[in-house]
Picture 1 (tube, rainbow over the protein chains, first blue to last red):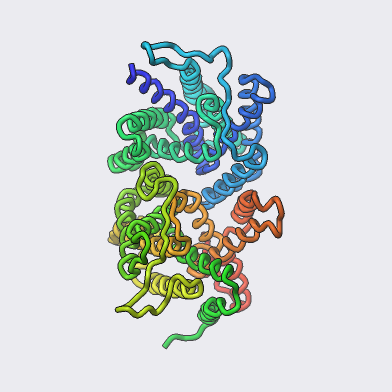
Picture 2: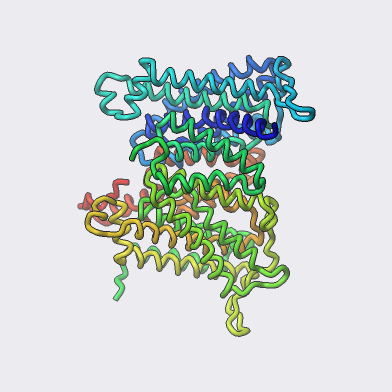
Length: 285
Length: 335
């Protein structure tokens, strides 16, 4: 039973990572922009959710508004700043988005302070399923797993079965060719970036009731997302899904086996995969 | 015979100004000056990778911080360590880490390199943060600075702020001189070739991997020197010293000063730390000083958008306009 719980936790954590990493990998694959501020949106999402939930008293409303705000901010950011980076070296993208992290982190400090907060789980989901006499599993975690799975399926459907998804894939494999075939690249880029940001903020918002809302939460998860993208291969949604689940498992297993070194387990796995396949699991290079 | 050209005169003047600085500054400014010199060495070490080899590392604080930890761990509790042993040991620790990590990350290129260097730096951060090594997340103190003595004679007392300042200045001059020699030597020319066109260098027959790894290890060792000095100065080491903020900041210094120019790295360190002091001074900005990172973040964004070649680029453009009216266009660096 103990291991079942750990397995469920691993899958749930992995799927949450996938929500972030899929946006990161698509933004990089399609737009060629490495976005360090991706984790900041996770953090901003969690704080917005905390604030709006306290304000409205309704978590669902709070999550919806958070998504809308993140999408709008993402659009604004893409059109004003990020769009100037497409032709620039990765170095400048790293620096500019590093600047964005400082700005977001400090704005958070100005508006919400530096305290750690919690968000209450809504009534409907606030109970646990008993598994044995003294072990149980919270329903909210199962709910989050379900939502993440649903989003993964929707994402897959949008990218592989719809016209927009076709354009996204075309842009991913050859930007110039897609543009010359009449795809509105600036609009597509803006939409992809804003959607990525909305996904990241959504991940932060639904994670808020499970874990604490804390400063620096975005940076921690950003680095895990990088590991996911490195393992999965840039621009690959399938790779991101496999890698997210692997990381979820490695992290949870690591915590059981040697809690102090659980942080290292993930990176050792990354090192091993780098030696085996420097271009990621799913990319043929 | 070394010719006295305008750039060399400028460097000489700058070195003289730095050497005379303690005679006019108060202790606070001398310590701030030493901090700038240390960060300048750190920025120089990163510029070797970013500006001269074309490898953008976002995990350079790992080697800086690791050397600081080595010094903290080998220093006896209440006595001074011997600098002649401690400094080489700390630098060797950083170089060894750079060799192990480098042999993995140098296989990757472009954006993978950025992410992987960051991830490995974060691994070291996780080790020092989560385990009990060297005080865990609380950090560890170095109560007594290492001693610089030759058979009982002490040429410099590192406990004195002024003499410590001169020691860091000496180190900066040594590193600067070493790097400028290295970059005009065949090794440095090969790195420039790799930066410009790696595939061509490989087809000529250069062992590109070994050159890149060599640059990575050397750069890590020099970062280790800076980290050791930083640990001496602050007398305290905690995991934040190898956190990725630190890596981002040193990258910022390199860009701010203009990468690929050794004087740029020094200028960048000077500019960044001066800016940080200005923006976080409550006397100047009152209650807003607490949120100085907001202004710093905004400035970083503005600089990337407006000044792609950094301060060094502006100075170069100005001096070109002054010296060569009939400018040679190929002298302009396109990156």
